[in-house]
Length: 135
Image (tube, rainbow, N blue to C red; front, side, top):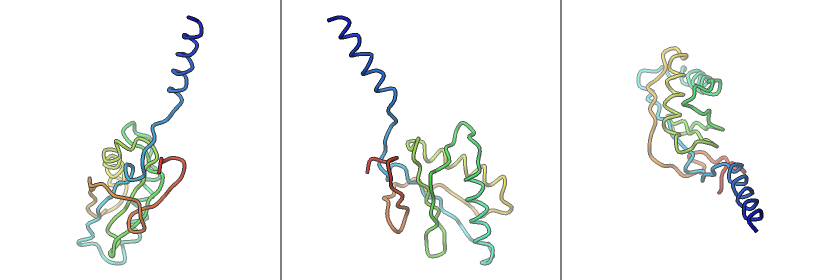
């Protein structure tokens, strides 16, 4: 009986080590606000491409995780929505680190800030789905 109990605890422990934390999509979404004041109209797309490329290519700096996907939203393309698939509880801090990385690599970037509100997935935000999330 003792061996069976020990074996059972071993299996339970092994199983719990192999499971990843799962999040809802809304727990993984973060919005970056872009202030285009003073930016020539013709430079927006170039800057968006430079910012998102820098973030996609960011190395693992220990304090960041590169988000799984992003969308550009807003009438003036003033929002970038990122959706993480892991480490979602640190999405704001991770995004701050990624923005700092991008600011150092993009020439004359617009003012970028992390919006710490919660957002639901949808056509006006971001709506990536799949096995990385529980919804």
